[in-house]
Length: 296
Image 1 (cartoon, rainbow, N blue to C red):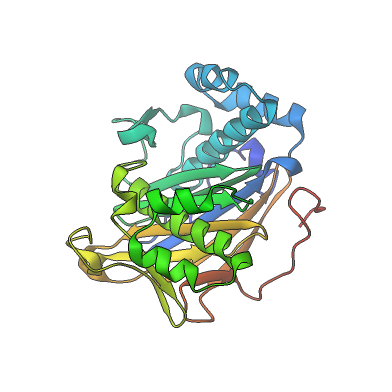
Image 2 (image 1 turned 90 degrees about the vertical axis):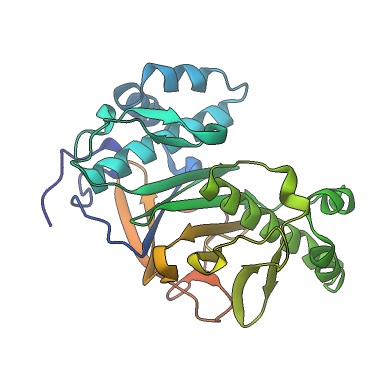
């Protein structure tokens, strides 16, 4: 392992060393906007982000959404330098299919490549990296849905709606969001974004097995090469990842790095202890509510 570039501001003085990401490995990074000093974030954004990224941030109407976007992009650039070397400000990013950020051609990396995807919701930013060919992550804040039935009719398959109906009413919202984030993660991994096919392509979610696409004409032709996991990382959030592996070989390891902005990075392994495809920290720590925690 070689020493990386000067410490990116987001990671603080004790930045992780530059690291090659092995194939069949998924590493997640999470950072909370509520843990981030606004002045430090503005400084980091001014130093690291491109003029187009800063202009895009100014287009957000709410300060909360603006800070969420800026922190996500600072995290992305810092992580790219962690894996590929170089300065965080030097990366040239472009919007790929459906606006998915990706490295522009000739952006550097010394011939090494990584697949990455970013998601953020209600003050939490989640970024996934893998040495495989493609990856999608999605996270959503759980919230009451007055129109749960009408949304389910549009976004869920008939089998998924039947599955929801078998759960008590207080669990149906989480069940809905878990299927939503699975579909979003899969669509983002494929580069297709929100799709009108959401209501036709479903997932089977249940005890004893990881999530898997429903059989039928909408199932992926190479279903054996895809790996899906639900993410049980923060109370009050539903998350999911979708990753494709050549030859159908599953991931050997999953890990999470929780970033305390401009201070430290804390790494934990993620395990599927229940065999149900839910990745949890091992051992699973109890967390106070979002943005009310002290340093990890």
